Length: 104
Image (cartoon, rainbow, N blue to C red; front, side, top):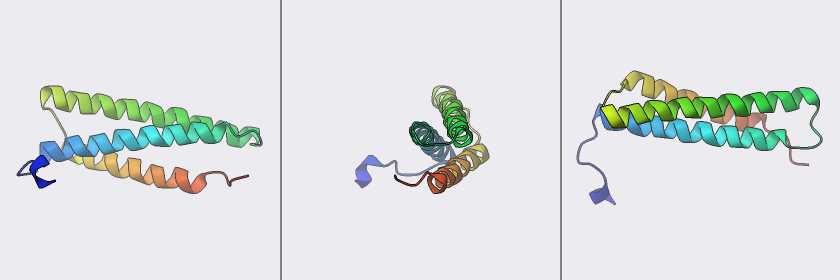
């Protein structure tokens, strides 16, 4: 396993990994939120909330993937932004998971 990893982690590689984690977690959140919005017994207000979560997080995932693409193609990156984006995505994942509707 260790032969697959680079010898030294630098800020660029960490930024790429953090952006990848953020994009993947936002995409998963969007999928789960849209899945939750498809439940038949949801009141209209909750349905709107889940659709808004789903669309918003999928747009954020798209934005993070554009940022990741920029970093990979040009080498431009912002380490602090990558850390904050990853932490925000993980916090949003936790919040959406806690808000999920109970199983019927």
